[in-house]
Each structure stands twice: as structure tokens, then as C-alpha cells.
Image (cartoon, rainbow, N blue to C red; front, top):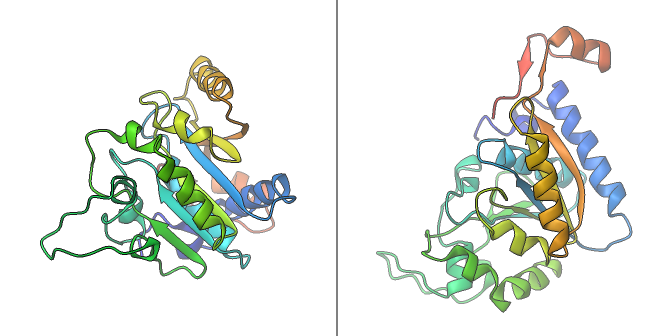
Length: 239
């Protein structure tokens, strides 16, 4: 399994504990709902959005909830790489109804697009083939229908979206999910960009419920003072 999955590779680490805290905050925020759809986005690329999404989803699944992650970045999706699964068929194939492979596979239903992971209670829908028009696919009725169908199966649906500062894909998705979390990078993300993205999401009817500050440098010694247990070596999230 990919070493980016911290909760699997180092479940007692301070970073794993932070993800469990984030999980608690998310669950408390949405405890009144029977099914929850959450979009994770960022301002720019390389801020750790997919890493946050994957580990948060794993943390939720460890409580016994059924979780599925949709790779909403049909341009540069990497969810399949993190969980060591196939890139296609995926979201783009589901929305477009087009899937061409050498085996001439016939896809008949939603189950054909869902891939199980090695993590109990956690499934994924990969990004699929790279389409020429990702934004146009996301505004199709099929996207809303997909979420409605998945709500009958899963307790949590988490979408790993595109960076809002680069393309409009996540803005489109923010309108049809329950809540949005923005990932920011310490010493990299500009406050004005974060505010602009937040305003843009709100302007289209999305609900921003918080932000996650990623790539924060902290020594193991400081971690040990903060938590009951700590890492034996210095830790820095650089995903």
C-alpha cells in the first residue's frame, strides 16, 4: 500500500492523530445528516489535497462508516495511484458513457466503476480517461444522479476536487455537495487567494465549512508535548 496512507502505515503517529481529530470535527459538523457529501479542494496545485482526502476518508472508514472517494480531478487525478488501483474506468467514463479499452469491456452499471481498496469500508471511483471537457461533464445531470445513487450505499461521499484557483471544476461540484473544505499550504498559500476562493464558492451557492493547513513544520519534541504519544523522529508533512 502507498506510503502516503499514514493511518495505515503509522497509525500511532501524531499526524494520524491529527487526521482522527479532523474526522471528529467533520462528523460533528454533519451529525444530523444520514448521508454526507464533502468536497475537498485547494487554491493551487501541490498543496496536499489528495493526501488529505485519502487519509481523512480512511480515518472515517475506521469508525465503521462506509466511505467512497470520487476522484473529481479528471485532468490530473492521482487517487488510483495512492490506493494502487486502476485509473479507468472512472468518473469521466461514467459521465460521458464512453469507455474504450483493448479488451472491449462492456460496462453495465455503477458497480463497474467502483473499486474496493485494501482498507475496510473504503471504496474509490477513479478519475478515468482524461476527457477534453471535464467542466462540461460535471454539469451534466449524471453527476447529481451519481451522488444520489451513492447515497443509498455509503455514509460518506468525499470528492477529491481540482484546485479552485486553476479551473472551475470544483466550483461546479461545490453547488451539489453538502460542504466544502479548502486545503491551504503553510507559507505557500496566500491569504488573499484563500479568501477569493472562499468567496467564489459561496457566490455559486457552495458551503465552505473550514480549511486545513497543510505542510506545517513541527519537531517531534513539540509533538510529544502536545500529544499523549509522539513520534521518535522529526515529522514534516510534505505531500
